[in-house]
Length: 174
Image (tube, rainbow, N blue to C red; front, side, top):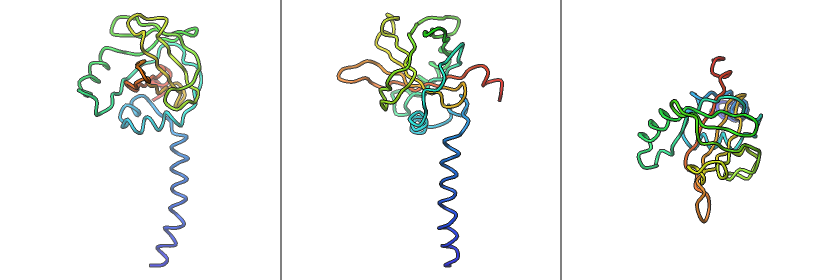
């Protein structure tokens, strides 16, 4: 019995460190992240740095909080209609089925989630439709970004959805 306790006391800390290291250096894909629960996505986002600036077309996926009203049907509709974002020269435009519209300015700034640096995608001065929207994103793997969409509300912004973006180069490497 004592040998078993010694083994557990020796191996458990090693496995814990290995798991933490593996999680910090995990390679994520859009499909992998899309299957994870909200709390896990938020934890991954908080651990990430801004990374490189997004460039070109990045395929997108929306994740609603599971407790949001009609979260399942809303996710299906959003993921059917919204396809991703086109980034170029400090700006972006959203891609919907057959349409490119809703522009934003892109730069690095402070995250509303945790105060750390993030890529800020701000629609305030570029879109009448989404004037009250501000996104932020961080690169969680090369070419894969995890982001948060906020609505500007008083007294404080409201986190609406999380989203995942993936560059074409990452999709073909699977």
